[in-house]
Image (cartoon, rainbow, N blue to C red; front, side, top):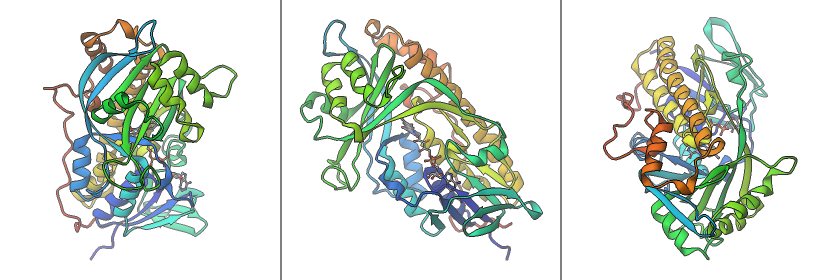
Length: 415
Ligand SMILES: Cc1cc2nc3c(=O)[nH]c(=O)nc-3n(C[C@H](O)[C@H](O)[C@H](O)COP(=O)(O)OP(=O)(O)OC[C@H]3O[C@@H](n4cnc5c(N)ncnc54)[C@H](O)[C@@H]3O)c2cc1C
């Protein structure tokens, strides 16, 4: 019997755990190296994924069906009433999404990758090409050869540099403030909370926009239960940072100046600990695999977060990896198929993220002048023919689905 393929995964976050599940389901012997010694599950931010992807991941054993989610089916566009402090609804769109809690998503993937070797607090110092086409990973545990090394080491990936030396992320001229707050904080705003129970909200303002939605709370949040009542209010607000001042607290000033009063108060109540300010940048590796190396998740490419696809892409990368490994014993051919499919998908999203960033932050429309038809037409122009799960109008055809995994988890890839 041929020996199992040996896979080393650098990074044990969303992309790394998903790739580990993919490899072990395809019969490989997988080791994950994670730099952080802390529990990654404590990152409590919101991650939105398409409902069909969620169903596929549950059906194929990547995610536990019991992982809490907070699905909604509608997107509501709001802005502040000109000259007033109340909100005005501009448009509603059919937009089914499955909001998740980042930490719960990671925990579920990590549990599904239970059988793999997961080395916490183990930074990889280097990767080099060794004998007979293998890659050699160096860490505090010494040197280990692998048939395939998956770089899942995030946006600042060192593995990406091996495939694309000198490639650097391109910064956008704005930042994002991201928060997740217990529902007790905005309890004084029952109308806004009621709206969020059935929809996710985009709030347009001069110079940017904010996204608001509910996500499941983790064991450390709210009542600590995994029940439908334990929710956090997650938001992401995009705008240029202030000149020469700390951008962190500026989000509250921004909200007070431009948001309807209730939404400004929600942001004001989130407190500094619940909010993080990130630069926005994007990058795409020109080819995401070259044997014996493969990139997954943010290591392969980062898109501006408007597309809500960083984790989605990492999960799709894993499904693709499992499928190509199962399709045949030739690893080189498998990685070529992965590279063809996933490079093109990543490049499409980077372009879409830039168009969205221009339209939603850099050159925003005159929000109060828009109504349902204007929002629909304007956003169709931004999409420019690219299918995207957040804007799936009734009757619109989804992106052609990649072939799904066919064989059972016992199929084995030999080296
Ligand atoms: C505001 C905002 C909103 C977003 N919303 C969404 C959304 O709604 N939907 C969505 O799909 N995505 C969203 N994303 C994107 C998503 O959060 C990321 O794309 C995703 O978390 C990336 O996962 P990753 O595993 O590729 O990278 P990371 O989570 O960055 O993980 C990389 C891991 O590699 C480890 N590592 C690095 N170097 C080494 C080394 N040398 N040795 C060992 N380990 C190493 C790190 O410790 C880390 O754990 C959003 C992002 C932002 C900023």
